[in-house]
Every structure is written in structure tokens, then in C-alpha cells.
Image (cartoon, rainbow, N blue to C red; front, side, top):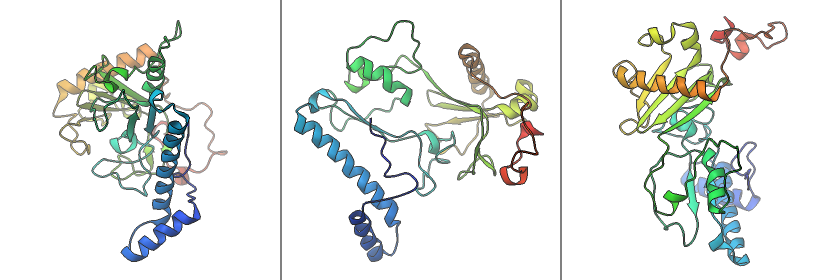
Length: 283
């Protein structure tokens, strides 16, 4: 596993790469030379890895996955996707995902099945012919069948993301002027995506007030990948079905949830609310 640092703060590129893109930026009168140089260095490093597999004679026996753990930072626009790293709109969780395995994966093939990085472990087990450890329940599924063209889909219908906390700094077209995200659970089921915000759910009437409390956002990603048209009020039948599935998942997994008040909160030892932002659950 290589967790490359090239495109991550603090940005640092090889001097020769930086000079290359400084010259390009001067000619074009635009661009971020340092960021471009970091992307170039990352790309070059991938080539070094692939060449090493060839030199060792193990390229055909190696499944290579190129991906990220989050969407882009604000330095690189995610439009038409909403948001960026640290939020649960598509700009925060839709990532590059490339699989390379000579002789097994058809070059240039594309798959539109939603996957998540939790699928990496069961996929690697399947590729190596290793059984899932006895007694272990895995959150992901093997992607081997869609990699090798034996299937166009997966048995799983729904993917969940669960983040019961806060991240500072708002995102482009975000929901919140203070935070990237507040306590939230998100699900993707087919073309439908549901955002379930726990503050509004707990404090503003729950299921009985879904039409007014802003606890839920609903999007049709096939028609609206940029998450601009919230259908939570206009499609209550879809909303209520997905809310029921989400609550059942939270219960079955014993997912941790925020409480109505943080028992350890002490305003005398924390940064001021003006600096950090006032949260609903502190009120």
C-alpha cells in the first residue's frame, strides 16, 4: 500500500517538476504551478510502481487499485458535484477508482456500479483465493465478479456512510455556513441518495416533522448528480422508505449516535463559540 503525499498539504513537488509547470503557467498566464507539479509527481510515481511490477515479472499476478479516501480539496473545483473533502455530498465522497490487472480486467472497460473503499479488503481476499476469516462480518463486498466481467452488478443494494460528529470549514454549495458537515448518516440505494441529519431529527420533531424540520435531504443522482434539487418533500414515499431502511441499519449495526448534550462540555476550557461555531446540540 502506498499512501502518496504528493497531492496533500503541505504541498511539495520535485524542483524540476515545479519549474516545468512554472514555465507553463507563465506562458498561459494562469494555473497553479505547485499543485500541477504535485499531480505530475503522483502520476510519475504510479508509473514507477507499474514498471517495477513488470521488471519483477509479477504484473499479471498483481491487482492494482488506484483510488483516494475522499474528494478534492477546494484548490480543485468539483463542479458539477457539490462540496469537497470532508462533506458527504458527491464532491466529498465520489473519488477516482481505477483497477488494473492484465489478463483479468479488460483494458478501457467501465463499470457504473457504486462501490466503497470498504470493498477493498473482501476483494483482495477473493483475488488471493482466501476465505473470509471465520466469525468475521465484513461491511464491504468482493468486486471481483464485476472486475472480470462475470457480473454487471452486486448483491448489495445499499451503501451507508455514518459520521456522528463535526468538521469545521464550510464547503462550496454546502448546507452549512460554519461546518463542512454536522452529525449525519448517508445512504445510496440505486439512483437515490438520502442525507439524514441527526441534530434536526433529535431536536426538531423527528419523523413526524420531516416535511418542515430539514432533517432529511433526498436526491436522484441519475438526474441530479450535483445534488441541487432536494426531493425530500416532493417524493415522500421514497423518503419514508429510505428513512425506514436507514433507521433499521443504524439499529442493526449499533451505530454510534450523538446525544442531546455533551456531558463533558465546559465553555471555560474550549475555544469560544464565535471562533468554532455554535452547534445545535450545545444549545
